[in-house]
Image (cartoon, rainbow, N blue to C red; front, top):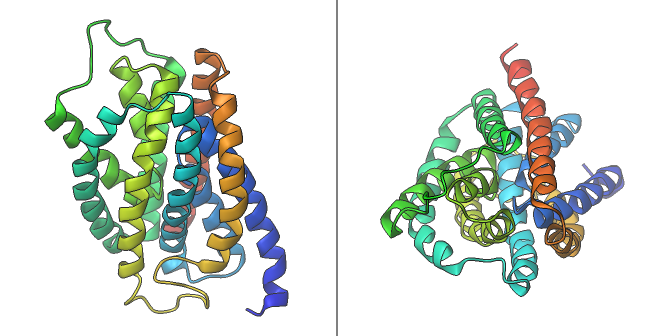
Length: 274
């Protein structure tokens, strides 16, 4: 595909970056829950090979999250909404989970990845929508427990191309961390998840055939560069709004956002199997 043919798609990627960056800052999700289904859809419209289409969306999404997480993290940290103790405890588990999830993603077909995405996002959305109240005495587990949760979050994040907020935010609020602090801490957690995922998907795509021109392993550079700039600019805007929204409103927005994306990926899974 030459530059002239690529220009309309660049416009779509720029628009995606604006929305994804804003969502990253607002919800602490790194933007991946939005990037993956929409990138996969755009790649499908460009007639990329079905066997690598979702893997490219996952790898490109995780690489983008490195930069949106940094931008969102700075804004949340400035407002005191990042719990660095949780971040330090969870990082070892994230590193282990990243390797596990990356290895699994390389072996799983597109339809299975799409179904995993839909199931776990639906679960997270339901928890947030029901606004289940944790027991007042419930608190975060010790350092080993938090690291163990990090393994799970990171493994699933590599399978769905996200920064982990779809699980880390519900987990922290379940342990009586306030929603604003959970969102801010999730933005910090998303950074190491994205770094590990980028390396894994880059290496995993080296032996793959049929990738479109401009691919860097399972990272599609034209989409990455076009999504990146507006997403980094919009993440602080979403973060500033997140700190002013009432808790109940923020939870409803988070849940509704996840439900829509789960349905989109479930449709993709059914279509792939059909």
